[in-house]
Image 1 (tube, helix red, strand yellow):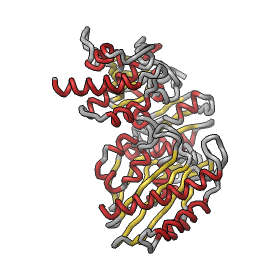
Image 2 (spheres, chains in turn cyan, brown):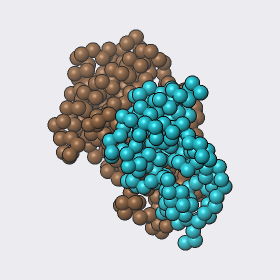
Image 3 (cartoon, each protein chain N blue to C red):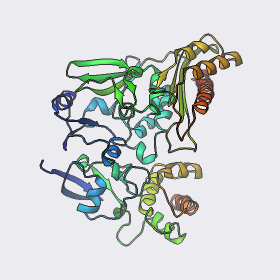
Image 4 (cartoon, chains in turn orange, cyan):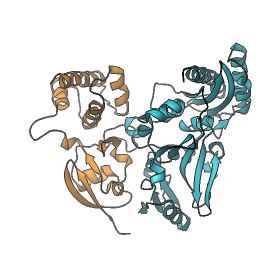
Length: 158
Length: 285
């Protein structure tokens, strides 16, 4: 079986790659495109470490096949900072130490950015429900939620 | 493993029907990809149905609604008119998994995964939804309660797929609700699920359907529970009859998430609460 030839837009760049049917979007991002910011935690859609947006929709890249994304637009953690300028969420996570080991952080950032794009003024409850699919095993949730709330406030005032 | 993404139902059916080995339909993939990764399934062919317009659209049809089998939970939630007409169905679909899973998971996939604990299935059954099946012999509509025969067992024949669901027209004073019990607030599999859809006139229930999930080998349509409240104002006596009928229908398993006694008890409680919510919504609709 020949590999699938896929053309997609990743973080604004047009990319082409070859993949096997069983390769997930996460496999392609990490192993073929060498975008290793998206992490492999559970490979079953439970942990959210591989979160990306697909045509603007937050998904687990481990639950998408690489061959499904032909012609589609993917945004990953690598596209979040603009050059040397961090996204306000990234800056706030650093300032408030809203991370420990960092494995879950790219997923939290991508998911939180997706939330703030849809809801610039989320309540704490809304943030906790939105981010319930992102697991942090260093138990850093309170700092993460606080960082997202404060970033939302900063961005509304900006 | 082959992957095909046809843009017509005819092509999808032809591919599925001609596959020599195991062929699987891919909608949102939130169950299929996990099962493939765990080596539970090793299909020879995957047919992605998301390029077929019927599976991806929600339309008002014949006074009711047609919902594509591959429409995601997130898309259902964002459809304000659908949410107003069928709040219980939308809330059931939105109880499945995380935000990320909501971005992919579909009603068709939830049904065809064949789990008795599927959250959207009791809501679909309570709604009186028909599954629109397309196969080598053409199209047929099957009540959702007749699609799943048991765990991982479906009434679909070789080459058949669920293209869409048809929800019936909604008389005035109608609404629905779905409740489930899990040990935490979200991101878990139903220990019990209860869906109720009803119509009320002057506070009196004139029509009702009650469905229970995770309390038997398949999702149940409990006609005795509906009969227990039709004609009533959902007064205490009717609620007691509803609880008793719901419990009498349960044939649950014992497992780490709930005992037979617990599931049976909770099924009655959830059926009653879902009926009260549906009636309250119907009053305000």
